[in-house]
Amino acid sequence: MKKAEAEAKVQAQQAEQMKAWSKRIESVKAELPDFDDMVQSSEVIVSDEIKAALYESDVGPKIMYH
Image (cartoon, rainbow, N blue to C red):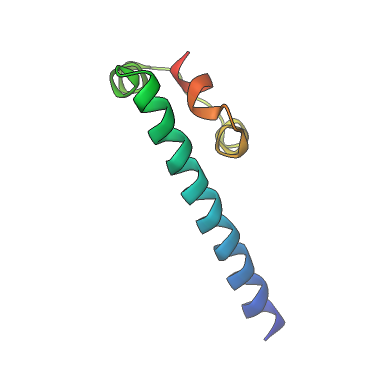
């Protein structure tokens, strides 16, 4: 039962993180109209740890853009 509660808590935290990420992405897209083009054209491969850091960062979308 504790395992199920812990998993539910992790899922809720991940959902909240993704919601915040989406808001930051939309904000940056409004500021940088070519955001999608720049990010999609990138050939840079990053590790899972870097991806996690970007998702958690308030400036993650801007880092991705640059």
